[in-house]
Each structure stands twice: as C-alpha cells, then as structure tokens.
Amino acid sequence: MTGTPTSQPRSLPPRPAASPQARRGGWMKASAATTAAYALLLALLVIIIYTEDHSVLVPLVVFSAAGFAVAAAMAVSGRRSTAWAAVGYSLIALAADGPHQIPEILHPQSADHTAGAVVLIAGGLASLGVALRAARG
Image (cartoon, rainbow, N blue to C red; front, side, top):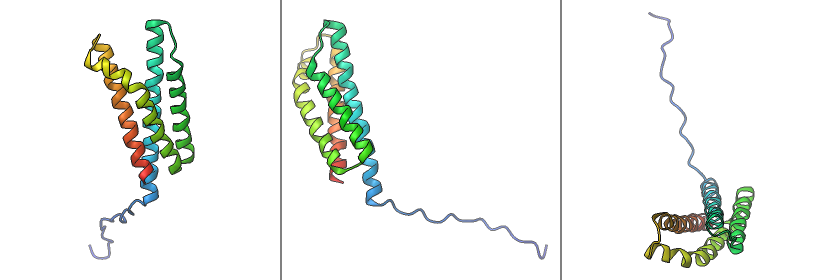
C-alpha cells in the first residue's frame, strides 16, 4: 500500500482559558436568574396570602416587582453595579420578609407553611450569595 495517504487522527486545538470578563458574565447571568427566582417566590407568596386571607400585602408586591426590575437590569446591562443592586435587594427583602418566616419554621402551623418558609429563606440566601459573587467579580 505504498502511495496511499495514511489517516492520522486530528487533534483539536487547545481550548482557550475563560477570561475574567467571561467568568464574571456567567456569574452575572446566574445572579440575574436567582434574583428573578427569588422575586418569583415573593410573587407566589403574595398569591398564596391572597387566596388564604383575601388580602394583598403591598410591600411584598413592591419587593417582587423590584426584584424583577433588578434582574432585568442585570440581564440587559451586565454591569457590576447591578450586581450590587441585587445584593442590596436581597438584603432588604430578606430583612423585611425573614422575620415573618422564622416563626413559621420554629412554630409550624402546617407542613405547607413550614416548607414555604424554608424555601423563601433559602431562595433569599441563594440570591444574596450569587449576587455577592457576581458583584465581587
């Protein structure tokens, strides 16, 4: 078989390392997603409270809308300042809603209320943690 080209396996070029901007962009997207998820949890809480008590807690509606606004700003701009806004949002929302959720965990009225309180606090802490990571770069 002289004169026939031999087939050598081709190796792929090495993959370039992700730049710091690309890594930060990933954290910004993750932060926008977790902030939006936390805002969605607060919106669901508004709906649940309305179905149980037929009342609307306006501060929760405002916190939910603010969370969606911050998440949208992060997704569109990708600036570090929006990540710091998400940190502030998460801190304020946790400080405002957390004291109402702690008694639901410590003195449960029902399994649904306890599970919801745990999910709300965990969602707020996750939003805060990812936003801090995105803000710090």
